[in-house]
Length: 260
Image (cartoon, rainbow, N blue to C red; front, side, top):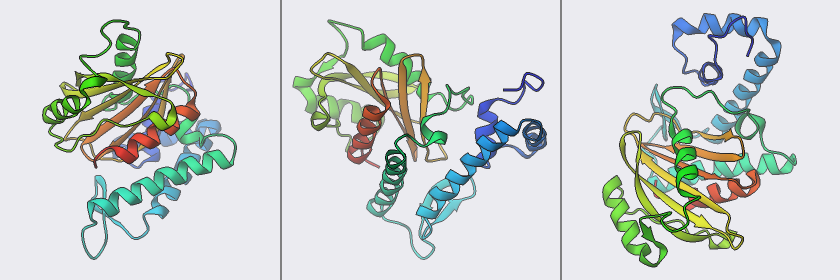
């Protein structure tokens, strides 16, 4: 960021591009962008991507001005139709990145984010991964041989009756187990997986009734990558020291399997 205006953070730019920046702050950001053409071009790219996402939901409308939960103009969308539409958006974004032989910059090649205060999920996911993935004897509370109990226990704590433990065997990762952990000060779930080489990744699920957007983003911290998204009140994050391509595939598979 331009050091002459250090009050404009990347979180401000994301909020500006998403139309979520308070009116009082818009003039400050617009003045900053006028003086910084590189950042202005980056924000313009984000807006172009946002327009592309909206086009995928052309048959839907917003239920509230501050909420991106979508319904059809004539009747509420069924949970299955909604989830199918969201999945189509995610797959389309992933496919665009693959066809261009790289990920879409606004989602996947941003530098490490200076997160807004409310956007704490990726940092919590990174911390959980660093704390637990290196554990040898006690990485989880409930191991994979009690998978059914794990799903039931964590589902009750998160008020998700149909919570399922994602099956990632098709991607070469088997379940190690899971544990209860705090996410935004509330009960959250962590599932841990491991491949044949001993490489681990974690999947975090948390609930926050104040969530208002559905988004798909990457955050990086040194060698640790996190792909995260918000689906209604639920937030999800996949974290690991693995390639972004594999992390994308894991996140996409988890998205398919988690309840809406």
